[in-house]
Image: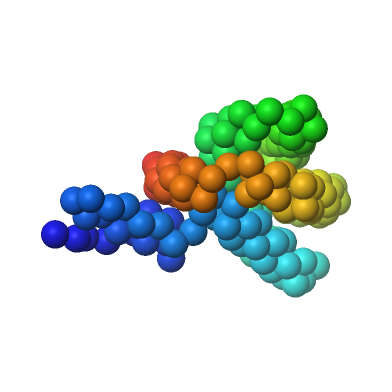
Length: 173
């Protein structure tokens, strides 16, 4: 008997008596999150100078996405990557964790503001640039290290755990 349970957007995990199958590993899942946030920043920029409510709504989506993404990385992905014996990889994880702190600080500051405030767009721009830098480093350095040192099965199992955790984070509101 098989049943498919949606756990992460278009991701489907199929359960059967003997096998578990996932269509996306951990790094693919995180790249999908990166693409989602990138698209939201594009929507924000295209919203128009006086589209304050629209920008506020888009920022709220960015906030939710980044908070859930960071939590999943910190709880599940980074600990797995830190198990790689390379000190260079551990340094990447430490730096990424610090970058998360910067992003979380900016998210909190922006969330406390009105979209009509003078510094609102400037802070969102700084947030976007911080996220872009973080994504570039993850995708060009950390993800290749994870792919090289973690087995395909480990990356897929991690992908399942991460998908389930993110689903729980984004539906608990």
